[in-house]
Amino acid sequence: MLTYLQAAVIGAVQGVTELFPISSLGHSVLIAAWVGGDWQKLVSPGESATGTPYLAFVVALHVATAVALIGYYWRTWCDIVTGFVTMMRKGRLDTVAQRMALLIVVATIPVGILGPLLERPLHELFAAPLCASIFLTLNGVVLIVGEGLRRRNEPTLAEYGRRFARQQTRTTVLTIEAPPRRQSDRQLAALDIRDAIGIGFVQTGALITGFSRAGLTMVGGLWRGLENQHAAKFAFLLATPAILGAGLLEIPELAGPETHGIRGPILFGALVSGLSSWLAVRFLERYFQTRTLLPFAIYCIIAGALSIIRFS
Image (cartoon, rainbow, N blue to C red; front, side):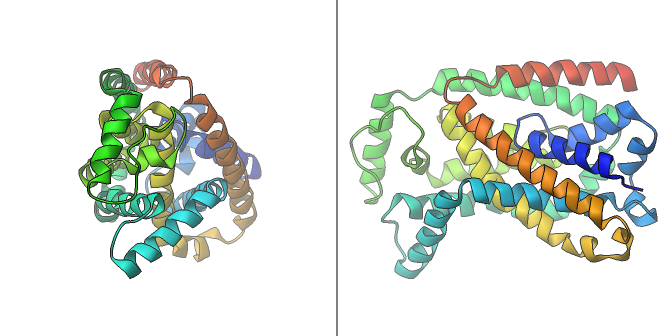
């Protein structure tokens, strides 16, 4: 039976680790395995169908995280939705918002296709704590590779200017002037369709327990030449439809008979998850303005290695 304490702890962990590049699903498995007892039973395969509706609980946590992201970036999302409607009506790209809308739609296609097909089979295949430990360690290695890509591809102001100039030849969305070195949707809109598709495919790696959606998407952005703060914002924007879509597909789980008697803890855990997600994205947006992925990489490698030793 899911208690209020378990709901609060798991909700807080989910909200933070979904956006920190350290794998929310991997931590759900590993924390429960380290604690053991009733915590371990919560995430055991098949429990949702035998009395502990953990899947329904996870759905609520994901929806809460998506709502928090929408709330945090509500101005950006209003612009993107308006840009998408205008783009569909006019059939051309005239603004930054329209191009951002196109990039997010294109980048969401890979996980939109592969997610429903592979999410559950991959989770069942790699749900064991040892598997999650190994992939969490590999997630740390991937983050280090991402930092190497950033240093190799880090855009200079002149490179931004050339990128904007190339876009200017195709659309009126961007200006030739190099933008200031700060958080701006103009840098993200400078990505092309191939960049968006590549980042979208990288994001699908998070279907494997232990790999981070935010981490892989950020590495994809760094691979395509973004800086950390721009890659982080694109990762959070791209995660929103993926998380919300996955949650909405499983909404019937929340209304099913399995949740009878524990809807209070589920709602409480969702509120905690939403609040922790809001605080996490607020922290990370500022953190990545001056700092890198390396601390998260080191954490993943150490936590993963200790877990490998523990569960071998």
